[in-house]
Amino acid sequence: MSAVPRSDKPAGRFRRMFDRLSSSQEDLESEELREDTKTTGCTRIGDCRDRQIVTVTGTLRTVTLRPRAGVPALEAELFDGSAALDVVWLGRRSITGIEPGRKLIASGRISMSRGRRVLFNPKYELRPLGRE
Image 1 (tube, rainbow, N blue to C red):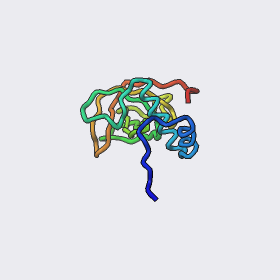
Image 2: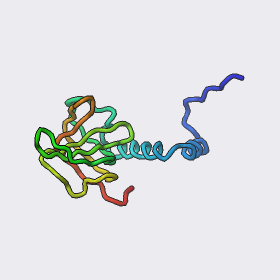
Image 3: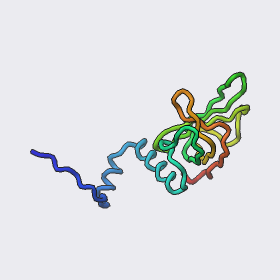
Image 4: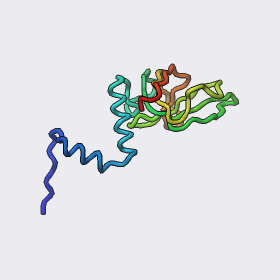
């Protein structure tokens, strides 16, 4: 038997429904985050380059207090469905509203640290709760 390749035409309603039902929860959440990035007009984290000024959006996965060079630093991992980046607020021990699971939009200049994308002291906007 030979495998019939799928055409590149858009999938029908039944195919999309079947794909959605057979996808894992993580895949569905990643797809939703990628769609959110498109609708807000933000740059996908996976497309960000070193020293580029960007506006990104996503969900905070983790939030930790991690001192850098003896200075307190609040560090969070922001994920948008394509990739993750670290958001770091230097000199801060906590920020109201910055917690795992919260969605936000952050703007600033990307830098690379140990092979990971990092935004230091970005401008940010917390997304309203309940839009999840």
